[in-house]
Every structure is written in C-alpha cells, then in structure tokens.
Image (tube, rainbow, N blue to C red; front, side, top):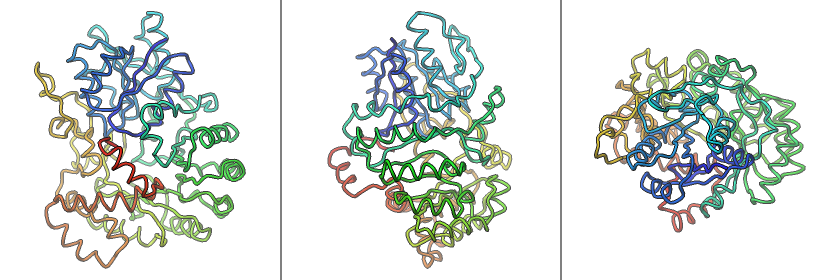
Length: 504
C-alpha cells in the first residue's frame, strides 16, 4: 500500500482532503496529514517518508503550496509532489515552472488511488487520466475521465483524519457536509460554470447530482452519534434546485437527525411549499442565498445570475412569512462596477434585510477559469499575468532562497496570497480602490444607513490599518460568527489553547 501525506497551511477541515482520504483508505492505502509552513512540512516528510505529498489547493493558499513544493525540492526530497483542486484545474500550466511533479485536473479520488496502485507495483503512471505528469523533462498531459455521477458509491468523508491530528478540530462548532456535486446555474463568477465547460469539452455528460436521501441520512446519523455533531453546515452551492428532493429531505431530517443546520439556496427556487417545509422542519437556522449585485441589469447581464428584483422580493417575502432566518451574499469591486453601483448593492441589501438577517460581503477576486475574470481583463481592470499562474518568481529560483509566504515575494502569482484574496481588491483602476475602502465599512453601511454620509467622506482617504481593522471586526462578528453558529465559548477556547494556529 502507498502512503499519502496531505499538506495544508491552515487549521481547517478541508472537505476535499477528507473525501480523498476516505477514498484512499477504502482502497487500502495509508493517509497522513501535516499542517504548517515549509520547515514543519520538510521535517515531517523526512521523518515519515511518504510515497506521495499531496496538496488540495484553494486559490488563497496556492502560494503556500508553491513555496512548499519548491522548498521540498531544494531540500533534496525526491518524493512525488501532487496538487489538485479547482484552482489547479483551471491553471494546469502551473506544473511547468514549479516544484510540482503531478497536477490533477477535476475530481481526484480515482486518479489519486490509481497513482497509488501504480506506485505499489512499480508501474508507469504517466498515462493516468486527469493527471498531468512531469517526468524526465517531459509533461504528459492526459485527458480527463468521465464526471462521477454515482455519488452513493463514494465513502463518507474521513473525519478521523482531522480529529486524530489535533484536538482543535473537535472544538469547531460546525460540521461541513457536501450532499452532491455540481450546480444547474451558469453564473459567470462561480467555478461551477468553468468546471462544467472543462468536463463537457472532455466528453462528460451530466453535471448535477445529489446523493440519495437514505445514504445521506446514514452519514448524518454517524456524524451525530459518533462525532457528536452539533450544527450541520451543508456546503453545496444550492440544495433547493431539486424540489422533490429538498421536500423529502426536510421530512427525513426532522424525524431522524434533529440538529440545527443551514443550507445554500437560490432565492428564486424558494416557493411557498419549500418555505412551509423549512418552517415545519424546525431545525433550519439559516438559508444562505446570493444577492451578488443590487443592480438588476448588472446582475443578469454581467454576472449571468438570472434573478430579477421582483424574484428577490418574492423569495425574501416567503422566508419572512415562514420565519426563516437568512443570509444574503454580495460582492463589491466587481469588474466594471462603479462606486454608484456598489452603493446600490448596499442599499438593496438593506431593503431586502429582516431584523435578524446576516450579510456576507465579499471583495471580488478574479479567480482563474471564470467568465467574469475575462470580462475584467477586457475592461483593462486586471492584467492577465496577475490572474494566471506563470510559475515561481525569479527570486525563488536562485540557489540560495528564503521562501516567504507574502504577496511581495509572489508578485506574479498575487492571487495565491491569503492577504490579497481575503482583504484586498485586485482592480488596478482608481474607482476600484474607492470601492475597496467602501467595503471596509459595508456591514456598518447596511445596518446603519445614518452612517453613510460619514462613510462617503471616509472612503476619500487612503486605506489604512484602522479601516482594515473595522472590516475584520465587523466581518468576524456580523458575518462569520453567525454563519458558523459560533458560540462565545469557542473564541475563548481558541485564544487560550489554540491561538498560535493559523485558521485563515
């Protein structure tokens, strides 16, 4: 059996890693986990001698992966290094000028297990579907296999990988669950539309699939009884697109699970019957849906989110009548967005709010593979070299190198920086920076309209540490705390016992 070491930067249970781990263990392979910077990772690798070092990469942590892959090679470690995930799928060329040996495009369970099987028997692995393999100066670019539609055949996520690694994971108050794959909508800002195009180009048919309710209930019962789950956070892009499924699910959940939960939805999918079912279930504490932009024309024509203002009002009205708390997500700093459009989003968010509403304000980032990113490049608001991985910067290819995980060290790969991904607007124009400063005060501007004249004056000043602090505090307590259903006791435990752990 092969030994796979999963590597990540932050103390957060990645569902992709949990799913890959479960699949590999089910096939008889061994799995390990290390979390930290490149020095800690090199030390762990030298001690455990894995057969494969694997990264499941989200864009904010791309630079960490590149730094670690490069550091591993500089340390003389010959172990195969592989990376996968949505970010890598859209940027497979990243293999050309990095310390990576293999990248995985698309879903990774089957190709990673096949790679382990080939290594076990010392067979060639350069022809495995979904994988690009760099070997002997050549890159083998293999086609993608068919999109996996039999969701019930997959093992349940491996929760023990994280629980056994560190007690911190047992204190996290929410449990993430992914019911299916895909999304029926074609929004230009979502990875789903890009993912669908790639798979269809490779010959796959069908994209949206939910697990059967009996199988899902088995996992939820296990989470409740074995892992003492307290709050279920369903992570699918939307769970309301299949009406018969969601209605049956809510009945089964009320009967068998009876834990607080939250879901993502598209507001136009919620009708009176679904609203009544959510109320009757009694355990849904939050429905998360996307406003994205307050301007109907921009929302429909640029973001390709085909929801009218009338549908927004109707959907919100249903949730209010059935006393369902909801969260609306929105983006500021979108390509082509003016300051007036940004204020329109804030005004619309206030109009659609209930007294207990939650607001998720995101500073838009031009992640690779998105149609909206191409729109921004055409407008001249992004440079193509800044939104596509060109390989490691020259400074990291010298003989004596100090790896640093900040945006300055990775100027040509800036979108892989956690700081830029979470806290900055990457638009290069002046108006984009005005919108960035407005975003710092967005939660206050939505909740307290009387502050808007003051905020309009403040955003004329340069961005500063005080503005960023306001953003982090309001984002933490008015968004993240509510979405994750985090009690105050968690923050106390974190600062007493785990404050040195990087969690974002």
